[in-house]
Length: 336
Ligand SMILES: NC(=O)C1=CN([C@@H]2O[C@H](COP(=O)(O)OP(=O)(O)OC[C@H]3O[C@@H](n4cnc5c(N)ncnc54)[C@H](OP(=O)(O)O)[C@@H]3O)[C@@H](O)[C@H]2O)C=CC1
Ligand SMILES: N[C@@H](CC=O)C(=O)O
Image (spheres, rainbow, N blue to C red):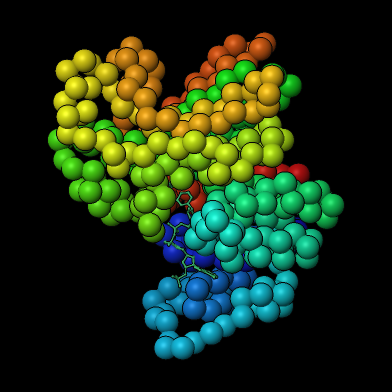
């Protein structure tokens, strides 16, 4: 039985589900992969826990309840440096401008020879190519399912299922929150503000929902996918974005009347001038397959040269499903 020590940075909505599923699946890992998987470290913004033998549930529960002490400061880098672990799972905030603390955590883990599984997007948006080169150099894996629409297969579709194909066009509904907001406005007649509040209550909206609503979340996923699946050096700022915030009651009435359905669609298209990506608000005809993709459901449609076109719909948008996507990555590492 091989021992696999895991550290988790970010112990919020998704991080807690990762910790819970890791515990629940211990026997599965033992039976399928002869792997003794232990969560040995967990970090929040206020501090970290580490036990080389594995963290107990009671300790984790108490840590989750801890409040920030006034003027407390802790050194996350020093904490990570002292942990002895094989895999980092990064589930902290997505800071897509600087990469934030997540970028440092992933760099540090890869440099230490650990595999890294990213659920947050910031580090990958800012420096996917640097991180992936570092992982290669260190002979470890950098897995990114959680950051690229999570339970909806995207990166795995390109790297496993469509390996060898020429991808001619990709379009997708990559953000559960915006699809939920648009569907709620169309079908329940509620305001975008009310729909955003509901998406926040479900735990799928980003801490600042502007990031979803103004198309940054979709654009971030496109940036990561363009770099990871197409080796295209696209930056977030290269991608034109549309916002769901600007949708007016008049537009909703007009779409309803014409039988069209609004969707925030992300596209990636290889062209003679390189990879083009965009986030657009499209009113699709009722006959378009995206018209039936409702609520928090996501979808991806891919055109290829020799495998034809294919579309995947679903992959639940919720914190448990996002955690499960990170642990799918974990199983791919354990199985190697
Ligand atoms: N929610 C979802 O459905 C999905 C989310 N994601 C991505 O997953 C990530 C986590 O999302 P979610 O769990 O909803 O977010 P939360 O805001 O609930 O949790 C973020 C966690 O990160 C911790 N944190 C913040 N700064 C630091 C730091 N400097 N060092 C260590 N930990 C830190 C927070 O600490 P503290 O507890 O002290 O506040 C908190 O525990 C995000 O990047 C998001 O984009 C991806 C797919 C789906
Ligand atoms: N905010 C995102 C969650 C993770 O990527 C969404 O709504 O899909």
